[in-house]
Amino acid sequence: MARIDFYILPDTTLEARLQFACKLAETIWRKGYRLHLHCEDKALAEQADNALWNFRPDAYLPHALEDSEMAASVPITLGWQQLPVPTEETALLNLHPEIPEGVERYARIAEIINQHQQVLVAKRACWQRYKEMGHEVVPHKLG
Image (cartoon, rainbow, N blue to C red; front, side, top):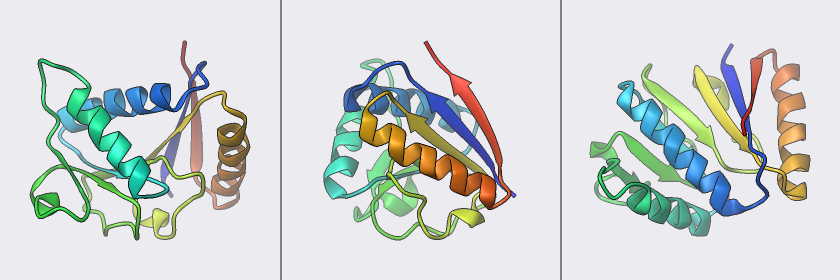
């Protein structure tokens, strides 16, 4: 069973979620893992891509959108379609409101909750579903 880390932010904005996603992506990458950021649609993936480009002026997180020629050669991918088959070193950061099909293939999964009502409702449902599936769910209240 996977370990699911829920990061609970005090903010309400999408920007706060994306900013924290960038911090988490950097931490995961620096620990030597691959990461797939799963988004609701291409527009959100492009926003996350832009956030990663502008995250830190003194650093670069090697990443690419899943439909890019570079996707196979970078450790961080951003997608909105079917989840890629993970290696042992691949973590999943789910920015989609629902649990994607194929999530059970990942050993480590992160979810980011902010205080926006739609996000709260969607992620509460995800929390319940993960528990029903038998996964270890670990909350991290931030701020």
